[in-house]
Length: 283
Image (cartoon, rainbow, N blue to C red; front, side):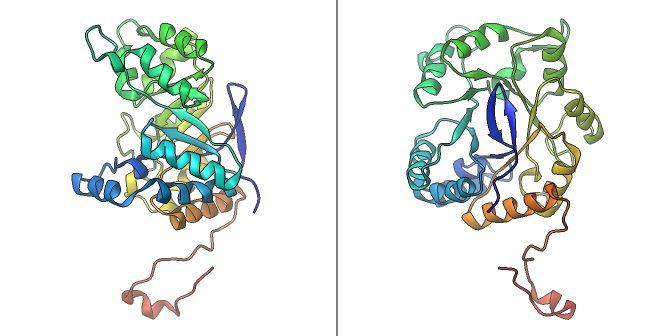
């Protein structure tokens, strides 16, 4: 199998497909019931099985939170494949005095460092409350970026607000990449899709797009076709999957789109499609 395309972020080679973790950790953006299904189904072994598929296809970059089930799965997958996973941790932390001691920025960044994070991007829940649109600044961000650098990690911004990109670019903030929601139907996006497309195209640093399939609202073939065909060569697509078969499917589809081929992936079958021809399996 060919290695997946790569790009450079902060001097580090990363795969252009990034492994998403919402479908490992129970953040479905669908319902509380679906969240409970995910957490009841996933184990460290199940997650490791999925990670192994990604790693064997050269997708070695992962974005998410530091949780024991995920940390254990990463170790299992690395031992099975002999390949290291490059981690982009997106932690939240206290931005005002008086919060829990374990959520102080120093403590949070220390945990990310201890787990071997390559990148540390403050999560949107932290980033977006720091954005001051009146004064065109991201408050205190430079202090947090220094703390991240001091621990040997690379800083960036995970944000749902497109203003974060333009403000950081204009102010020269210490950012090596941006995380932005981007999908064909505008799910969870703050602006119209064409506006976000332009912001990503004009960003001074690479952009890691998330929610490419709108949390299951878009078919993989549709969501991935849109994402890969409307971002730059230096940008990335984050993809979450629940099973090894889903991981294989999104990888195969992405190879096809990146090489300008029409996919020949196996389609789902229902009885209503019987008149369209015999059921065909591609693998």
